[in-house]
Length: 543
Image (cartoon, rainbow, N blue to C red):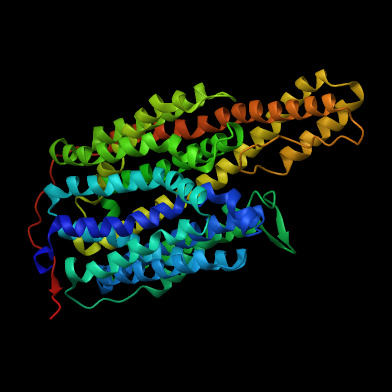
């Protein structure tokens, strides 16, 4: 297989497979929530931590891992990350209890953080500037497919087997990547000695952990006290203080080797794309979370059917992204990225407008195709614009910062949309219940309204057949009355959820519009100038 060593497209295939696993695991667990609750005897809070443990560790450590790749070599970090991720995936699939699963998911997040920034670094070092658009097009196709394929593949695996297989599916991919990486990816290492910015690593990790933890757990504690004097505002405030201390330390160490070289942000395009990346992450979570709940809880779709309903967006994105990448090389990425953000927001806004409590899946086909076309035009030009003029010696740091911004955006988006959706659902269910309870006998109206209010405030659970509230209003009710109560309760939830979903999705659609307008600040250019002097690196060839 030596003829494939350093072949750019073979290298791209290998890093894309590793990247695919990490993104898949950000979304694949969502669709398995009902199965996890029933099969593992987990609480809803347990399952939320199964999701958040991965996202938190990934968000906190990815910037450090990106810089480590610059210091010790991106291939070494990539292989180590794949190894940790694959082993943790096997452990997740074998987990005997929710606590063990949460712990193994945190280790999985560590592996993802180690390998994710190396993918962009390896691509940057493998492809010349005028061909990176096409390479990032393939990378972008993988990103788009993994984001939307998670629910589809997860639904298939959960329906055919059970939740454990959403983790076991990573094993053959991880083993294959580990076997071929040393044969295909060249071992490019820095040509001079480096040091690790220990104070920067500790401050950045502590700051991001505090901020992300506060955002994830804020709604659970009503944004107030956790225990004793410890509160969510205190944790968030501590995170902000640590972040400011980190920035101060970075400013004082710019002449040596800081964790985040501020020189990266002298490139206006890199700075703008970081902003757009964060806005996109917020927008995507604000769209996909309400939509996934709607498909299962309101329409009663199975996990598999819900995943297949969203599959057209993934398929369209997969074919559009490589073309968008090639076009970025030719005409620049500014207007392609703007068009992608606009189309993605328009497609998802279209879904929010036409969604009804009894919609059928074909209704969503056209808007999902529009959204998928837009998604295919986002990732490749976004990364190409950001990374095109970056010094390869700082590619790991640049990739780490870009991925950190996106991951923190995902965490903020999850927390924000959860709080907003819950708030709007409580309000909508109260309004629906007040109107529809008029059909009940007077003595049953007050208990019915109390049951609906209690259900709404206790939170949303994803699963087919959501009823909307307690229908047990006392023994001895005639069957006809009991059936009518159950029907009204179901209608209260479904109609209220559709209303709440529309109101919630307004914000992410607006954010996507803001991101599109922000692209006007990007400096347009077809090609980056060739560097006058290649960075001093050395390629270590195994004997």
